[in-house]
Length: 298
Image 1 (tube, rainbow, N blue to C red):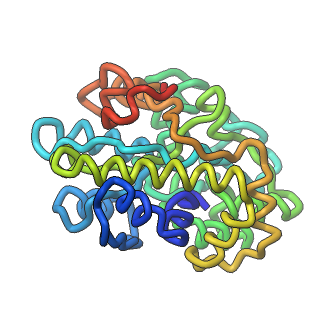
Image 2: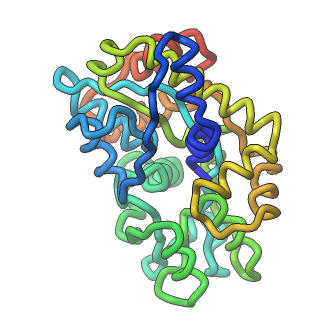
């Protein structure tokens, strides 16, 4: 459900609608699923796709790496859904309790939002010098495989999870949370951003305005009409969740979607301070297209 905004955009053809409004009739959006974040990044840099969606840490790595060359820019955040580290180990009640025999499944070891949040939690608990303390415990798994491993008594006894897998896991007796992205951010935080190259943004100002307008309308629809959001998710995602399950996730007050970037500088400052990115952005506006600079970001 991380990508619910794009599900709604696709299902309701919102980009096509907004493109026509700004004088670009006939635009047709194609939504492509790629296997991993690095594939998304490569596709955008190469021009194979125009706009990608990725986690904030992965975007920051690419932003710092391509300064002066491809120059990527975030267009809009696409969710503030909490990510939650859960475990079936009764001895682990907080991250400080994690030991050498625990194994944490997460998507994108060392680069995903979950991986960086785990590093931020380690730095908070044990100091910046120990920010990689839990790296050796992590195993790269997609959410479906991670959930299956967690619930099947394999060596993987922890999962840094996301909806709707999170809700399925927490419904199992003995599975309990030990860390949330809200803990790490100190409040709601942007998990992922949509991005493009500066070259594409500068060459297509009308299309960029249409895309941002479509994203904002999708976010407003999710907030205003849960049925529309559930319809889009069921039609586009391919997930086998029930309508009731999806509606329950959307009813959670900690799950919301809006256009304001939240906590991106906190992540950027941590990654720069610990040497994970070489360049520190001056402020959050440095990372985002000018069309968003008037928003209440951080």
